[in-house]
Image 1 (cartoon, helix red, strand yellow):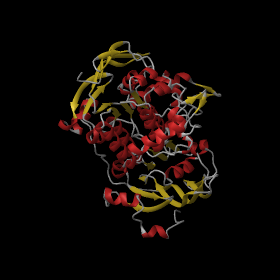
Image 2: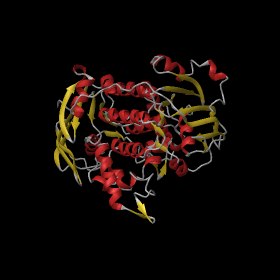
Image 3: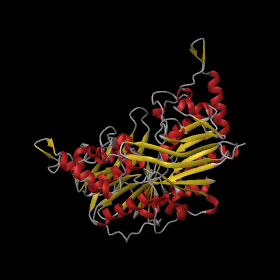
Length: 517
């Protein structure tokens, strides 16, 4: 029997203006969790897309169990037992979970769809692997964590033995990440082979057996995880030492920039209150973080502040100006910058070139337009400046279609646009989601720099390490309410976790409502 179940040997894949994979070799053993590590745009997703048949390589071969195979499309990959969970899920939002799982391999009898046996099989897989899913729920109505379970069940339903996970934890809560790590380890113990793309070194150290590192499309090396350290892996990835701590001086808050008063919000259909009497302030020169387990109202609070949703009741003020009913553009003109939670839905126009996305919030300003006509040369020059400043990797520079860029580089484009825009209020939601350690280090420095320049920063993050290291104050939300206002220098991670889980509450928050102004 061959030593490796999959071998990708000397793979080369090119796109216009860029070599995404340059003579890359990856070898996967049966029953192992094999991590694939690299900076944003290093070629990790491209390499896995070649293995899954979404792309075909220009050079190199793929072997399975020692025999060369040809993978021309995802159907070929599925026939060979290869499945893939993509970074951005490939699900039909108006279909149910069950319909998505069986899509493409629908069971039928005399030309009619028969789902009873399929349902029984999926339920058995769900129970066996600890992946509970409401099979009759529509994808658009379920959490991203459950959507990911649907994607995993799609692979298991097709009896895939080689499972590719592309940035699987980028959209998950810490609790869901722990569950996924246990699930992946269980798959490996059963003899399935896992390829795991990630930027998170802690996850590699926790679950992977071996790790292959790519840098700018080239193969750097493969290491035994048990015999290496996070520091060594990060240096292999970015080619230099990386600091894992955020360096910042003590905050010196000044005037109130954002005031939130008695905010309430409930869904139009169910009348379920997701935000209950939330009040707080953010001052110039401080970073205030809203923390909590996903689904406790943080996202709704941010959407109301940024204008993506309307509050049921309550008021919002920016520099004493009531913006409760103002448009998104008016809030932007008043100095609000927003790094959104969902970069595809609210951050980018994916079929625009990068240069247009980089001026989405500013194209009407005099430096970019005259008499309602865009100044294309100025826009391109500005885009080139941001691309250089923030190391945004794009095959055709400013003219690159944004959809074709890696998720991490899409995120860097949004961060660059919003940080460089200026203004007094920066609202930053999951700013480092999907970024490598080098990019995270840089973005953290930029957020601290924005604070030190006198901007008010409202941060929302599900990364506890990021919450603790970046924040000057932490507001913890549980079941739609603020249950604690904490000083990160005076609490432990464990204590923060108790507030997030609802096991602990600041007594002052029981009565201290409506005092934001």
